[in-house]
Amino acid sequence: MMMVIRREDLKRIIKAAENSRIEICSMLFGRRNGERIEVEEVRFVPNRLNSATAFEMEPVEMVEAIDLAEERGLEVVGIFHSHLKCPPRPSGGDLKGMRLWPVVWLVVDEKGNYGAFVLEKDKIREVGVEVV
Image (cartoon, rainbow, N blue to C red; front, top):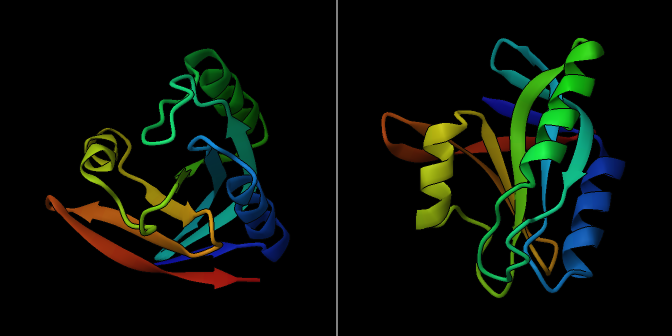
């Protein structure tokens, strides 16, 4: 499996993570093409927990983002969030979210490091990221 994301979108995510004192989050919309997850739109959603160690997307804005994407023929292909002062790998809390949202999870730290992951049979597996 490979997640494909535009360079400018990844840069925007990294810059937002570098400049934030709380975990930031967004939904990644696009299309699945076999084993390729093609990200076509990044939609930031406020972290309603306002926390440096956890995130929860604001529900109303999350639903609005999904509705707008579906109107354009896009689907949720991923979830993005940042980690502050820890590696860009899913945490125990993320694992719970990965069970609810079985899509690619992109995790970025405040230094610009990132990784993409999926949950398969209760095991976290890293997937490739192609920046185009």
